[in-house]
Image (tube, rainbow over all chains, first blue to last red; front, side, top):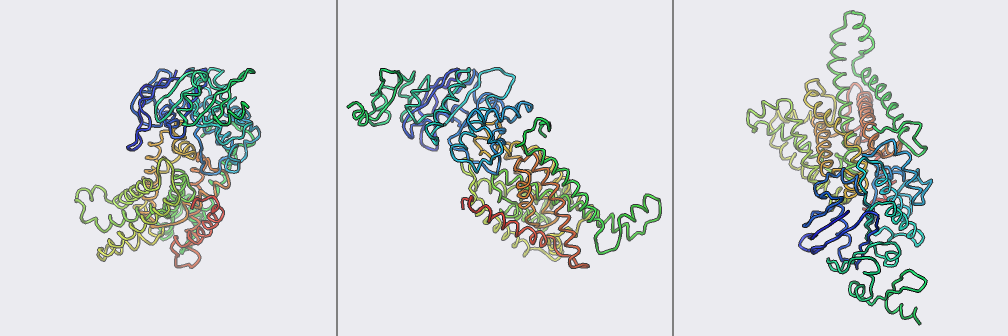
Length: 262
Length: 355
């Protein structure tokens, strides 16, 4: 269980988050959505232990601020929006960085397995810097997968934190990456992801937290949160939520929605 | 060291290659060391001396002095200084996440130099107890403090929110170096004749003045830094992903940075204290090794120590023979060898540098 209570974050003089409460359960995919500048990434960074903040974050019942970095790394992995890499490491070497401090014997198997899971089988010896942006992003995903897959002794659920994991990917790879996250949740892991794409969120998330101006506007299942009124207010533009009879949900800006309805 | 046995290591694994390189470099170092012992103005052959000693025969005093009081300390000093310069270059590049970071380039050596010069010139102003307690160690310790302060300031200048900017690092380093150079200049003006003589010997950038006493003063600091370096390897690997991601994979980033900065300052400071400014070893050695065996610091740091030691001994041999019986300052030799390599690195990388 991940529980954050009354999180307030100030960066400089500006208060980015104002007393946010947030919960996520293992076995579920929890999405954080909201317009640009609403505090999504800041909330994620508070949950991963990157920021000092007011309020309390408990991960699997333990106070986040009391955990040493290497203990924390055994409980959660984080995929940042972009990770520039110094020095010419190969894809396999980057993935292996996620295994730091793990059981060494497992390394040789986990690295190709993680790369294959993100559709990059055979990329082991390729130089990271020579890969395309989308491939680099998936190598980094393989790295965090290796980190949560590596064998440890504690047996607690482990958490994946993803910051806009699909923003630089084409639609096929967006679906692939979301399925990796979905599968990890289905196997009992916890997934918390910042999302820009509301349609993908509606498709894959179990729970959604809608942020606007550093406050939680709505929290619940996608069906609860994705309502015309709440979304239009958060994003300051008319949005229509469509639920076609054949199932699923898709969202459109109002004007386009009218065109589609005609 | 990692525990991947050769049979489980896949084809993409560069670890085996890096380990074989370590063995090769150790052999190269031994060969070069033998050259260092046999070359010199005097025609002493270490092998004859050794054979005589083993056979219990009388060895000429001159030969014994040349071998044990001149060449051997000089060889040991060359090995330690070369290893220290190469390792501090590698650690600094890992810390700044940039292959152009080098203690000589970015003002850390200048800061260490300022420390050393202050110790020589201002030594008289120190409390008598402190000066007596430090003795021979005063110069290396002051150089260490100077190098430490400048590394700390430089990291503060160049790094914002966990990102290091190359341009800021290089420009900040130039300013720091100039400042340290100017302060050193003022101190040189203040120095009296005896101090000037000390300064001249110190500033030549030479291993010529190596004695066991000088070595004993600086060796502990260099040895300590060299022993610390391998413990930084995993952390520096993780730091290649940036400070945030390094924390995410379990690295205590703040502690890593503190130890890395102390290691750089210790190795650079002690090396500068005994040998003056010897350039380019710190940038050329790690770069060549990254090309040959990859950037994994678990192997890079060990190999850099071996190659740095071998290269500096070799440079010293060259410095001794090109204009024999006179000697070239070793700094000139490393600059002639290292300058072109540095330019070549720059040309290869200028597309990726954010300058």
